[in-house]
Amino acid sequence: MTKEELIAKCAKEANVTKAQATRALSSILDGVTRSLKKGQKVSFVGFGTFEVTRRKARMGRNPQTGQAIKIPASRVAKFRPGKALKEAVKR
Image (tube, rainbow, N blue to C red; front, side, top):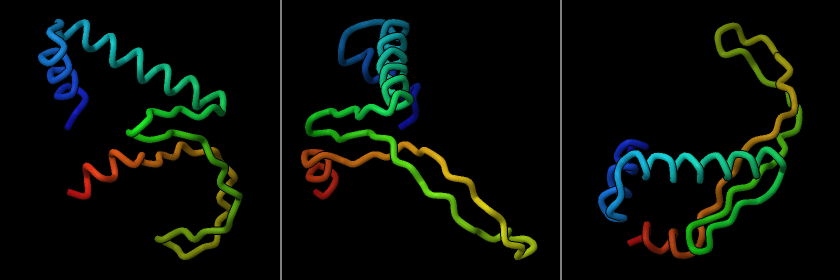
């Protein structure tokens, strides 16, 4: 499902315009992004939890040349599905 398809579905089911659904979805995504940027967890009970984790610096290899390269430490977003989502997908 694409963002546009999700907007259309939300608009239809909530009986609002696509513009209103777009603003609502954008607001939710912006809120999640801002919270993760601050290092906070974002939890939707039953759906899942978004959080930021740290990856340590490590050595890697350039696949074209085989030369060793240093990969710097970074912060990455991580999603853990909730119990209800796991069960829904399992079926």
